[in-house]
Structures are given as structure tokens and as C-alpha cells.
Image 1 (cartoon, rainbow, N blue to C red):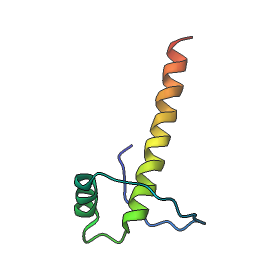
Image 2: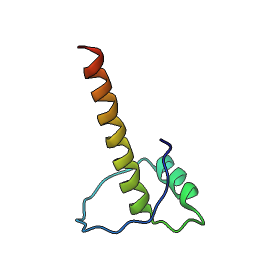
Image 3: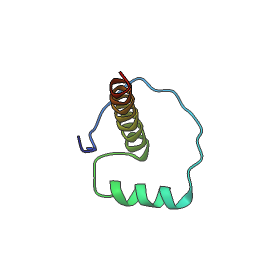
Image 4: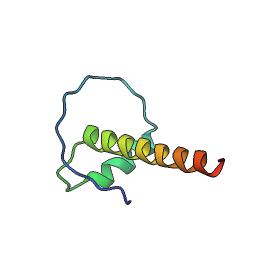
Length: 65
């Protein structure tokens, strides 16, 4: 499944995180002219990574059986 930028509103909490400047610049380019904020993009990217991490872990566990 490809990563897709989508609007989504959920209850949130503030967290402080440091990003490399080049990553910030790349994210800002990716979301330019899209209806998504920097925070929304990061949240979606994290959710995508976690979902794929779980899929990969499940596949690894199955192959060890």
C-alpha cells in the first residue's frame, strides 16, 4: 500500500521533537499546495510506518514457524 496524504482530525497532545533541517525542507516541499499541515503529514507518516512495521513483524514471525 502506498503512502497517501489525507486530512484527518483526532484528539491530540503536544510533543516536542527535533528534525534534521533537510528532512523538514523535504517534508515542506512534499506538502506544498496540499491541504495538509506539517504535523498532519508527520502523524500520517508515523502511522504508515507503524502499520508497515507491524505487517513486517507479522510476516517475519510467520516465516519462523
